Length: 66
Image 1 (cartoon, rainbow, N blue to C red):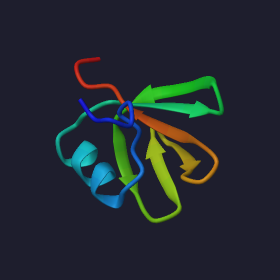
Image 2: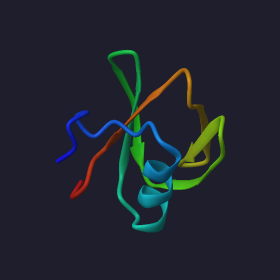
Image 3: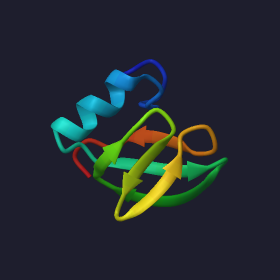
Image 4: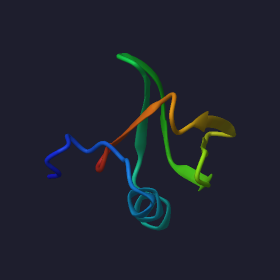
């Protein structure tokens, strides 16, 4: 497991989760908002379940096996 508790921070993290269909949990500070698969992303936003999340506002945590 990653040393950063599975938090996605690098562009390559998002590519991996998109390509390998690994679920991602979204947090707004400590509040859980969503869990699902990344359908697309760019340098500012991540789309999960038809919702765009700003990469600077939200935290994205890997949830393999969910």
